[in-house]
Amino acid sequence: MGSVTRGAGPGRLLPPAGGEQRVTFTELFFDLVYVVAVTQLSQLLLAQLSIHRAGQTLLLLVAVWSAWIYNAWLTSWFDPTGRSCGWPCWW
Image (cartoon, rainbow, N blue to C red; front, side, top):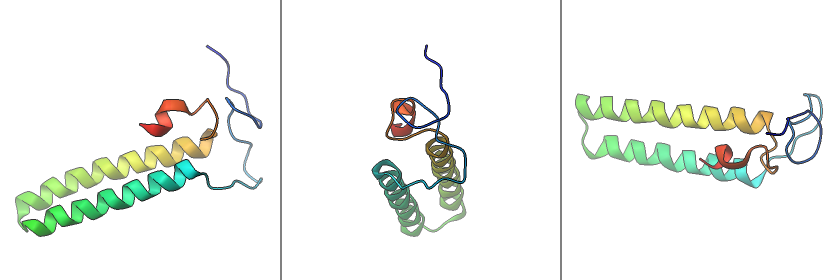
């Protein structure tokens, strides 16, 4: 297994804060996926407004939110265009 070091290039951590970071297609794509997921959850709740459905929607919202936070954290530490991010960025 190769080591991961800071610096530019594939297979490396992103440089320390202070440098400019551009938004990648991967980050924008997943932001759009999470917006669609939250929209679908709101439609699920509106289809049958009840306490039971609100609990289901809240549970699913926490799962979607957790996935979004994990993905945002991962792509802020690792280069999403490099090999170090790989499958964790996509799943």
